Length: 413
Image 1 (spheres, rainbow, N blue to C red):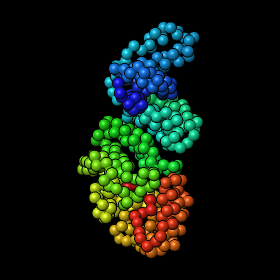
Image 2 (image 1 turned 45 degrees about the vertical axis):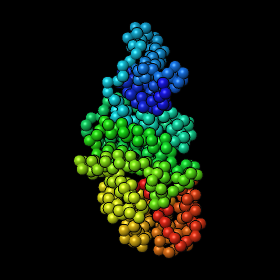
Image 3 (image 1 turned 30 degrees about the vertical axis):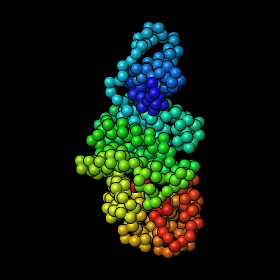
Image 4 (image 1 turned 30 degrees about the horizontal axis):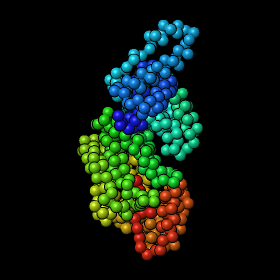
């Protein structure tokens, strides 16, 4: 067989883990058993071939491993009788239900910190190894291992069931937020040598597709998936052959993924028509306006400004504020934009953020303040931990003045 075995294992991970947790309880022990089964599959399947029932194979191996551990712990308490009753059959049928949503909700349990939610989701639902998560998040592998271990211990007594209806909405907010964080870190890495971490953004899209399949009427899940698709559609054009950042206005739009744009636009259009508008739907709508413009000059900035006004009323935040100021500048001129920046300059969340200074630098360029623009670009470059962003901003600072460009850092809509 020629299946993509790592991809298949990643897809099957939440199904197998869901079967074990539902059957035996104890998230920690079940997750360890599933990881051992995945390791066995990764070693055996390339040699022996993928079994006809890969899910059943993994469930069988993981169940046997769980039983072995259980036997050693209850050896003094009727080991043979109870173990025989718990022994799984040779081949397990595929699970009757998809446990992905339940696992997502469990990994985003309110007793866990956001960082732990992120790491555990990538491990238990995404199927990433500890090493892969560490590389994706740019933290030591030992640190990720400790976070996951502590998270699993805290969930040791948590019930593997959907939360009651009165708690489901709040938990879904956490799930959407974690998936959004995963995508954002993949779309524009917060630090390191690469602008994008493609594996991370691809994993976020895959998990959000699964969530959307379970909750197709959830407007914000639909909006989140649309936002990811519409943003990721530009991936190939966001860097040049050397990995250097290419801003939105200078991208070769023929390299954008038109199929992803069409799918994302259709999703957000249907969501806005059938559900109460939410932050992810509005962000997706902004992304769609950018993607539908044949050239940067044809971008419908008045429409984007209206959408940012709505987004700001729903969920004000520093990046929303900056995005709105960029749109305002494109509609009413750079001097108006500079005034709006001055009005928010005291916000502690913005003062030390490199994007504030990148926007100010661009607007100063537009009004002819070359020295001020150069100083702001240099400051923005010092504040970012992303090597491609820093190189781009330093290049903007060094370039001869006299011609202007789009904002110094492309904004995530």
